[in-house]
Image (cartoon, rainbow, N blue to C red; front, side):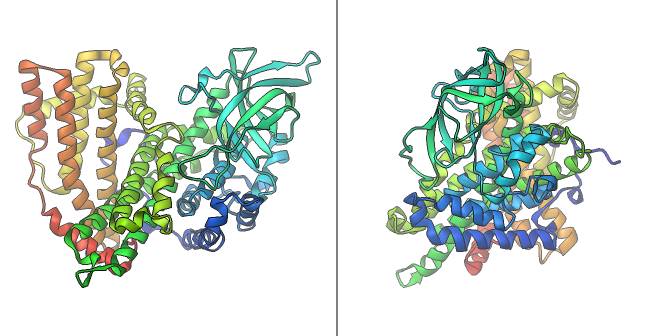
Length: 584
């Protein structure tokens, strides 16, 4: 069997464009799922948004049951438990389309992701048989109770306690969980607690358990239609058979679920950003000033184009990663009793890419909704226009599933850890680059050269970091954050370029022209930003002659002629205005 790329290997290897998955590879079934999910969101959710935002009684449950009837709740659930067991591209499509649904995306994500996947991946047969069929239909609603008032990103510092009852039949839970999605309506809670005060362990807790209560609804900036409350556990008896996975290994459950959660959140953010662009393009076509649609004004064109470019790159990254996840899961035997754990281990291989996607897509979303408001002008600040809600709703995405700061730390530390184990050739790549730079200037020809430059900029910079700090580099968060940005940039430019090259090969240059223009516009702009970030980082890592040498090497890596990106954006803006939405 053909070997699969290791997580993080994009920084060291050349990738064949035909080896990646792109949206152009959607099957007829994928397209049908896209239409079905988008239709559900438009007909069932957006049509009732006012009622949803007002938290109309029973509406969330009704919507989840309606989603269940269409098979949208059971995409990741095995068929043995009434699920659809879809491929990872299909589940990504569902997550993307749900991104249009505002706060309901959080409700649905809590149901189909973090609220049920711990059982799918780590539950026993009996636990799966008891809980998953109800999750699939929407008759049972799931929630994920990890965060506490004093334990957010540092989840392992949780104070919630669990103790075995004297008769050995129950675990007794005491503590408080904070910011729990679906808490007001949940029938099933995945709760993390420390057994005997130190063994971090996961439990399945029934929502009607005596001693379990919820606080008042949080008054939130956005996603107002979702339920977010604290969950209070006061001597809650949990049957011993509801212990999830193994005692003291709750962190394995939590962190593996977060990998998939981060990836799905990136897909949500992608769908939400596309919706923002659609609203902005439509408004720009209709709104006239000085006798002409504002879509004809240069600075509005530039905004529409840049929104589309960034969305194209995020879309390329998300579905490339979806292809990686699907390929590795397809290569594994997940038919046994421990199949879920095997799948979780497979997904963990691309934990770094999941974090990269989460950071990039949520920041593209933030950009898109912000520019969407700006294009609407004063009307964008009015609650009568949908873009105002999208702006408020988007802010939480950079906090959910591990803040973007935490994820930025994870990207380089994961690379360093895997390199130390011999899984990634980091030091070899750094030494190889040094040898190439010693030979003189490296001329970068075209976008393919700039993609390699992005990777080399990362290697040069992390090499300088290791030179100064060694293993202590993992404690330098300011440096780690910038290294993360360089790695994210490398994955972004490569994903955009590979997709464009695949499209040119498969569709021809004329049909793929817009994709090619988007990739070129992004890459030419991004490399300059990566170069500046590297300069800033290198200046913090060295001084004197050493710094001068590093900056000279950086100059060698970024010796390129930039394209006319203004003209490229004008071309892209014209296509967006004509379509009235994102479309490549």
